[in-house]
Image 1 (cartoon, rainbow, N blue to C red):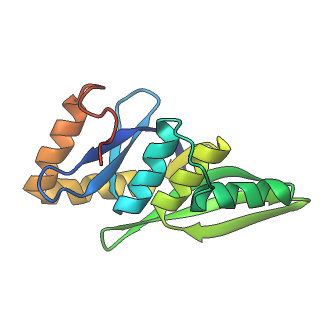
Image 2 (image 1 turned 90 degrees about the vertical axis):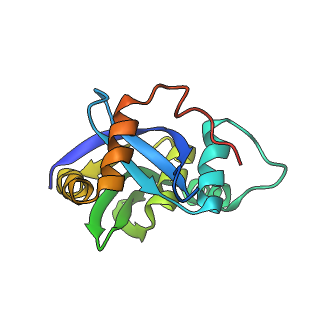
Length: 160
């Protein structure tokens, strides 16, 4: 498994479906990976990206707090698989002397990575497969081209 380090470039709305998209990018801004997410997950990511604190802990904040209270830590998250147009992720944690890996939706894993400052990785096979899927769909080709040419203002703060 070859892992590519990535960060969150931003959130945007799919201009066709109005669905939220989280956009990951590699360190050289050569590879962009859009992942369509639910509105609630996009909100959780947006709150953390914009450093907005809520009066009570949201679900991902609660999970972070539980991890901390148990003296565990998130070591990394990995977007590990793309199957039937659905991305899969794994949350890697260290708990005492034990390494633990937990299956998660990418949106939840990304929201938790932001809150725990854990690094984000995407398996190279997923990037290769995502490109293959994109090249078969002209609408996705247009989206990929737009993402590649997007400025920081285009991918700025997510508006609800």
